[in-house]
Image: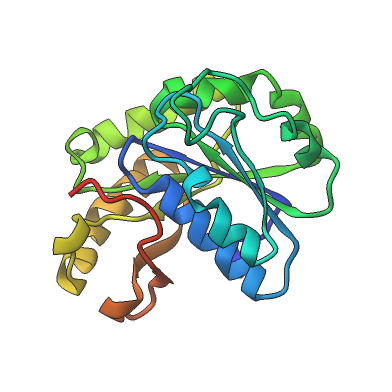
Length: 216
């Protein structure tokens, strides 16, 4: 887990369906259980289906502060920032920012890119080689660059979260490694972690649980 703690603000971004929110929630849970002060900010103002707001009760029970869109989990969903959003730049908590998918979702970061730069941040690209639009490492790399351009921020590493939902096996996780390594070579960014469900017991992987809605 220490590989994620280079900066207090941790931004999780990537392709739709790559598992960004699941990574954000798992990381928050791990940090809270390690005794860290944590907050999670749901900045997905593009796609209301997958959002860390759904996990607010579990996170709050662990002492994790959650910052969610005002109309999250209601029949009203407006593209507005949470009222407490700007507190992440002044708090002493580890602040995990769950960003909407693709470049459109990352645009919200550009408004305050100067604040992120001043505070220091680590932005991680969540990669899933089993998603149609990022199956080709070259396409995954182009998406990475589009997100950087729209957010006006830079990635510092890749989280290989390659999975096929309930059908994921340890073999499938291991088979994803060459694809993730190619994205790493194209981008010049290190793979900071490869994730896998705890039940799969993949050696060397960062263990996670399914905390969010599943696509398949």
